[in-house]
Amino acid sequence: MHTGRILLFVVAAIVAILVGLGIGYRTLGRPGSAPKTAALLLRPPKSLPAFSLVDDRGVPFTRASLGGHWSLLYFGYTHCTDICPATLADLNQMAGELADLPTAERPQVYFISLDPKRDTPALLVRYVRHFNPAFTGVTGTVADLRALTAPLGVAFSYDPPDQSGNYTVDHSSVVFLINPANREAAIYTPPMISGRMAADYRAIIKYYGER
Amino acid sequence: MLRKLPPLLFAAFFFMPITVNAEGPVTGVSHVWIREAPPGVQQLAGYFTLENFSNRPLAVVGITSPDFNSVMMYRKLQHSNRGELEPVTTLGIPPHKSIVLVPGGAHLILIKPRKRFFDGDLVTLTLRFSDHSSLTIMAPVRRDNPRH
Image 1 (cartoon, rainbow over the protein chains, first blue to last red):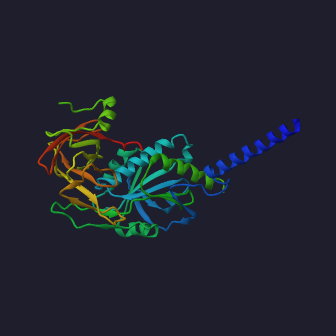
Image 2: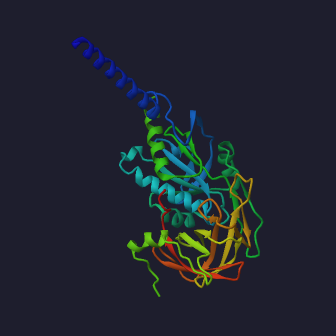
Image 3: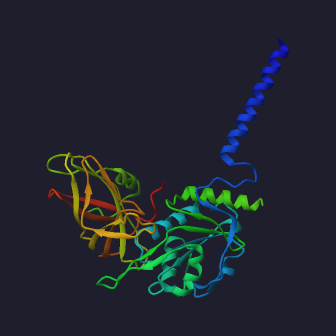
């Protein structure tokens, strides 16, 4: 009888451990395996092309500018009324949720304007700082922008201007996560939910940090 | 007139349906807000959820604001993966259904503000309906997106 109780206890303990491992596996994934994220994880990370743009302080912004830190790139324009400010506000909220990370692990956010005709560096400074003082605006000629957007798969086109000369820019609305080795590591697609984006970010940098 | 919303009242305002009509509860508006524009931007986006409580189809046929030069209604082009928008002159609401204006979807564009609006300010909007009724609401200005 005593032996039977011990056996029952051992079996129950084994079952509990197996159930725990199963839940952990489903929730976190196998240690070292790719995390389950809403963001599209690129494996292996994809090399970025060479490009030559300028940031909102007038400093050249190239592939090398993205080296040594994690970066989030979003393409839009300041006359965009809806999705661009919505995404930048989401990125600001995401940055707030990652504020506990060591500085070196926090992402730097770059808003790359597809509308160089209107979005001068001086205008971009005021625009991006409205969302977060640490965000950086970037732009360049249309040809230089396409050197970066085409390989990333960012499509954009200019609609005909209205009577006032205003025009809209149709553009893809995704956020690219670039790793410290200048490689495209993940793509966030709408809907942008800051809490989920931050959780994905933590999982992705942890995953690559372990490799 | 109250032009600035106390923070504690903000949430109540955001979630409080506002129903006004001579024949009783026909429409209800909730989740009303306008995005604060960055410096230099002359167009603000506006959002709300509008419910039709009646047994008849209803449509918003125009929106005006004394705080802006004009207000336009936009919706996303169907079958577009790049978020192209088209202006529309009406927004239809089937009986007992609602329309939801949210970032990335249908929304208002409020053009040329009379002054700069900041987080917590209130903007007056008057919605005109296909049944010749109208509804005036106060929309709070927000800097951040509503939390998901």
